[in-house]
Image (cartoon, rainbow, N blue to C red):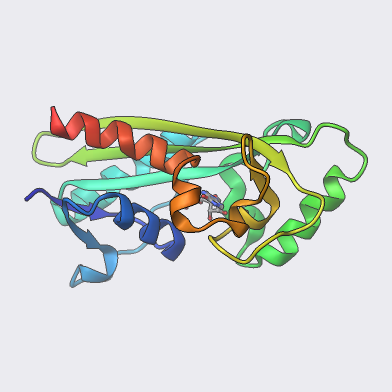
Length: 191
Ligand code: IMP
């Protein structure tokens, strides 16, 4: 069975990625003996930051490493918070939701999308592959539901009449960006 290190400190992402990769032996950063400092994510795109994380942890651990970089892009805000989604919230998502409601208060266009870029880095051969997934939808006028993580309660995917925060994990996985990227990765690993 292929062993893959999932390089994330985000518990919500880790749970989802583990749910999608049940046929692999998964290690997380908490399974690594030494504490590894987080890398500096100074890329301009999801692809840049995804590669920075996957390469960094793969080289530190010598394990086949998977990293996801993702975020919420709001069209009326020129794609913000985008690659800064995590930093925009700074740990307080309730506050981040309220800030976004304020920023969108006078906008008619509430369309938005989640994007994920997953990198699988093989340190033995210094090779990597990237897989992308997007989920289109809109920003609600108030938070709905307590499921998921991050911006899930304020995002309604196109084709559903509820927020990701109101979805079961299985419902979210039918629509979400990360699952789309993972499906491409699994397809590639199976070939
Ligand atoms: P990263 O760890 O730098 O990639 O940060 C990604 C951030 O984007 C997360 O911390 C969340 O704020 C947001 N995000 C990404 N995917 C999702 C999702 O599926 N639901 C809700 N928020 C998400």
